[in-house]
Image (cartoon, rainbow, N blue to C red):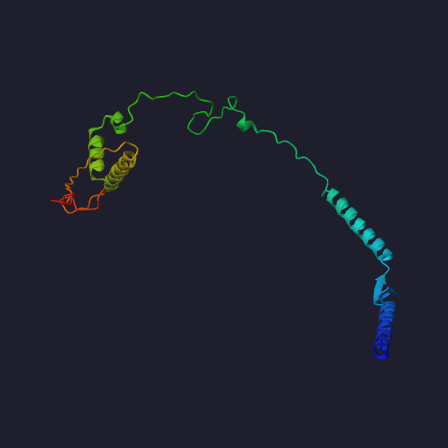
Length: 193
């Protein structure tokens, strides 16, 4: 090793020692004479573990904290107006709002409901109104269109039957070579004739 190299290494070692002592590290020289820095991590690790455990315990305690004391609301009492069959109150018209049993009238015709009144003028007006009602005509036309579209859509569910015909006429040319001899069909395969 030359004197220039030795001087360079010595200067390098001094520099690393001064940096290491400034950082709180110890300088060690290994067998390869290369300076390495080793830092003592024991106090830092202890502080890091203590800080982590403190943070975790604070987070657990914060999760256990509940807001203000919970007070269950009192059940409300049902007012007398909603008690049902026992509630009989007279209205201005003299009727009561007591429970009434249903009287189904499914037997009444539902088509021309105005005929119940037996008024000929009302029947005439209803027939004129239904004949002149453009919106009703549009609705009937849309209904017929929707029904036709449904029929077209349903037609795809049924089997299709189709019939088609074709005709092809072919004949073998006399000049077509034979697959056996390679000569044309019209020429004799014998050589003496």
